[in-house]
Image (cartoon, helix red, strand yellow):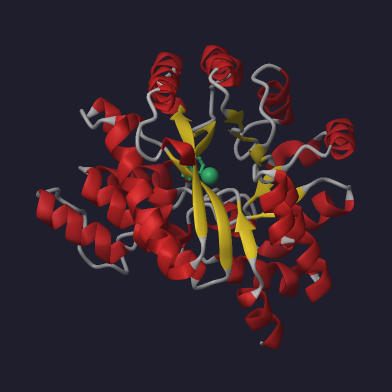
Length: 331
Ligand code: ADE
Ligand code: ZN
């Protein structure tokens, strides 16, 4: 439709997107073949199949395992920004989750330098920029989180290549049975090193876990925050304080199986409650999404006008960690 085309072209920012979740299936197959990593299938249409969040995370980890060196990260970073720019994304704060690679012996400085190199090349071609958020992988436990943040601090102090892109620290992966407060040391250290703070919560955990993320860990934003709607008092507080939520409606349908259809998603309820709820894709390649579709499907399903969608896009800028001058330039 004309509205869908206009929303695809609308300049947009994205605050919840995992760089590994943007990896083209053909690139996964190529890197796996080169590195001798066995895949369950080399059929690019079959590679990304799963029936639950935990099955999805297994596919995500398989994709991650094909990134074995700096050049692989550079290629991923390049293709990732190119693919998003084709759907109107002009600025992003992208997650990377290096726990698995660090355990396997990769160096954090090589991952950051590789992504920086790929981003810079794609930026030169498209004008679309990307910054980074280093995510703690909850599955690896609190001490691995502290170790990653400690190393990030060292790299930043040492002026390592690409570290100017790493704006913040977050946390992702499984939520089940994990108290976010157990990551307090990593978050405190990240704040001391001057990193901005966010975290995945409420995709698969109750509103109390979202409150812990903000009140105990000091997160400034909440990634997903889906379960917040079950606690009206907390919704009112988050609305009053304008605490941003980076919501990923189509991901919640396709990955978390949280709803049967987009029409059942609480995104419009979140918006009308006054929450600063932004629109994002999460893992666009693994879910066959793009940011243009995310906007177009929201407009179509929730009955939003083009102007409504512009307001949502502007809220993305407000929720971003862009310096005030850069944010103003994007508006
Ligand atoms: N890592 C990548 N996508 C994720 C998601 N939807 N939830 C938790 N961890 C993730
Ligand atoms: Zn996510």
